[in-house]
Image 1 (cartoon, rainbow, N blue to C red):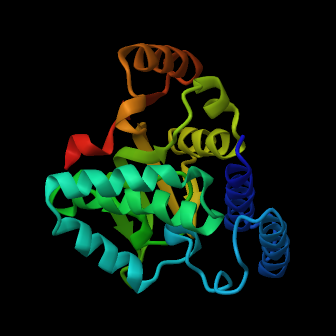
Image 2 (image 1 turned 135 degrees about the vertical axis):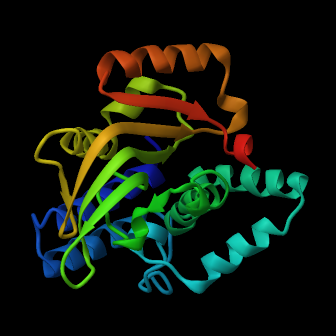
Length: 245
């Protein structure tokens, strides 16, 4: 595992512990600072300027990200391809930049594939830390003051981006294992509890996005065979972002 990916995984796991109320905010802040200090020691990022939350959907969102999406929408297809190609190269970039670029892919797909006009709901509308699910189609039950308390998802999608070609390595990573666990919870009668809401899932899907050059017939066959065998309750697919632009 690349060093940048290692710190990214630690931050993801720490956020999940906070979401699950396994730790309090003070503990979260302390451990997060420790991770950032170790990352800085590895030369991956500068803490100055990083203290402000800039880690996209899970770790905050700023105006720059929104304007970046607006700028992307105005580009030609060739220019969009160039942007995507450059962002895939951030695996060895400073940690904060790598996370920002990967989260930007979610913004793109929210605009071009999981469209609100087509009935998709982005869980970021409820919380930047919603467990496991990025987009869904379904209905909601609200309380007397109009707050959503239960979500009945006909289809719930977890969007994942990766540059790895090794499906077994991808499957055993802790964030992926936890994410699959969240979806499996949503498929049960008790549902997936997150941020004061409970989601009941009819169909769970994980959409995996890779660089277009990585997706070959052989890779797709291998990945789908392993994924279907390991998690038959979840529908997987492997796509390139460019397919939807």
